[in-house]
Structure formats: structure tokens, C-alpha cells
Image 1 (tube, helix red, strand yellow):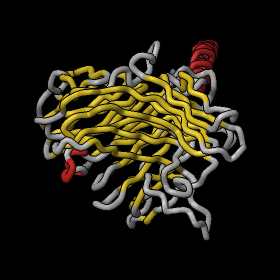
Image 2 (cartoon, helix red, strand yellow):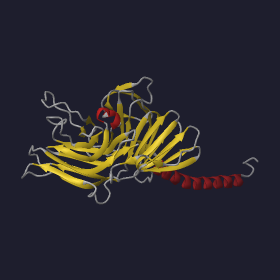
Image 3 (cartoon, one colour):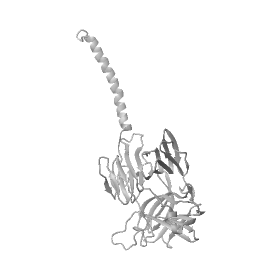
Image 4 (cartoon, helix red, strand yellow):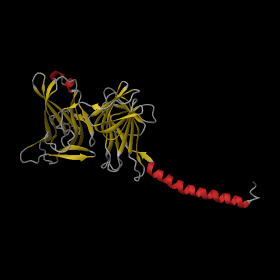
Length: 409
């Protein structure tokens, strides 16, 4: 049809097309803006650091690794690798000033581990209901992933391994690859483990295993835990008993149950600024025979907030977090095994003894796990665990502890 022969019809066609185009724009533009507001995202700050030794960082756009010993920012697509003598830490934090930063997710890399931070993102606009998203890929070794939602929105964490996908929002999970199997142990919280189109939920105190090409195994108890109420729910006494030591007439330290994020914790604190030695903590009688087992391991979460005495103090015995296991060895002798944690180095030229404890980051939840104490103490192998004590020691201090477990297998 020649439009010159029937201009009215052409005009109507143009009007109708414009009408529908206007309707489409009136619908699609708001939908597009809504989708942008609700679902667009941006990079979330993340950092990597070596806890001991030297870790190798492969940036997303680099072919050669960078050796790291101190904390440095990383982006999505970065891969962190440890060798047989190093351990490392990835921390994803909220945005804001340095005083208001909160760790959303921490990833502890053990020796001989390779982990990629695929993405760490947050919604671009506050109106979005989406959570913070942290995606990781574990290709070898072992990691402990701890996630905690912020006050603004929850966090969603996904860990991919060659055998499975693990998804959770909050909690602490020990994930390792051994041969062609992935092992998932839940310390706290609940995770969904998926493989071969099947899902299994694993909750605190449980573990599951996924073999290559198979569905996840049904959860079973992770181990026999000798500690009662290690998560400090409800009343703590009994089984825990408080210990507060300070010179007469001086302000004592304080012990209180607090909530930090979604976990209960014990806080040990003292801010007297009088330079007086002090100890604040809790102890629990165990009185269990531990002969006949192959492994004995202490594990707990801790957050160090303050210490006035650097290192481990003058005699390397004063730490803002200390663990003391009182045991009887196979020869009938009563002994103690100690482990201290600190963040403040000794100043140059200090006459204090070098600290024998483990240095950890300041202000974030850190999962401490001892080696197999049967191997560590093989000359004085424990036969009976008498008690466990957790405390802060020094002059002034502030530290938190949670999820305490002393397990045998």
C-alpha cells in the first residue's frame, strides 16, 4: 500500500504504534528501575592476610602470584594458596569507617589449601531485600568459614568444592577435601549440602561427607564433646564456675554472658589501669577417662578486643585469652597444657620473654583448633581429663569466647 494513497490509515497506524510504545515504556521503565534498585550490586570490601608463614595471592587479572605476609585488600576472583608451613585468613567486612567495620565472613585457610573468593557483593541500594553474598571455591585443603549477619541485612555464603555445594547464612563450618571426598562439619548454625541433585541439612555438632559422584551422606555426630554448654546458653553455672583473681582491695575483672551477632559468648574484661595482675575466667570439671581414643582436640571461637600487656607478659604467661587443660597422664601424673592467644606484639628492645602463644587478628571472631593433643603430648599422653579452664590474664583486657568443644574420636 502506498501511504500517499491512504494517509489517514498510515496516521492511525502511527498513532496506535505510539500508543503501545508509550504503554510499553510506562511499564518497562519503572520495572527496569525497580529491578536496578532491588537487584543491582557492588563489590564488598575484602582482605587477605597470612596468619603465619607466607601465603600466595593470585589476583583475578594476574598470572603470577604475590607473596603476602600482612593484610591487603583483595577483589572477587582472587585465589589464596597456602603451603605446608603457612596459614592465611580472608575477611569480608561491611562498609563504613574503620571504627564501624564489622566482619561478615572470615575464612581460615589451613596448610596446603587453595581457595578462591569468587565474589563478595552487597546490594547497591538500601531498599533491596537481597543479602550480602559471599561465594567461595575450595579446590584443595581445609578451611573454616564463619559467617555473621550485620544489623542492616543477612549474609548468604556459598562454598563450592569438586564434590558438592554448601550454602548457609550464619554459623561456623569446617570444610575439607580429602582425596575425592568433601567433609563438612558444622560447629554452629545450619548448612545445606547439595550433590547429585540431593540435599542434606547439617546442623551444629553434626558432620556429613560427600564422595565424588554420590549424594551427601546422612549427618552423624561429629565427635564426643567432653564440654557441657560450650555455647553458653541459659545459665552457665553449673557446669561452669567463675574464677576471679586480683589483689585485695583492687577492682576485679568482670565476667558476663553477651550476645555478639547471633551467638552467645562469655566476655572477660577489666579496665582499671592500675597495672595490677589479674585473672578472670571460668572452669568446668570434666573427670572423664579418655584412653582408647585416637584424637583429642580443643576448639573454641574467640574475639580479642583489648590487652594492656604486650605479647604474653613478662614471663609469657599473661594473655587476653588462655586455655588450660588439667589432665592426668598415663603414668598417673597430674599435668597442665596451656594455650594463649594475643594480638599485641612486644615492643622493640623488650625484656619480656618471647610469647609462646599464638598471635591472631584483633577484633574479629577467630576459631582456634589445637593439634591432636595425643600427638602433641605423646611423652605424657593424657589418660584422664580433669578440668578445662578459659580465662583472660594480665592487667587490663577484654576478650570473648564461644563454641567451646573438647572432643575425642
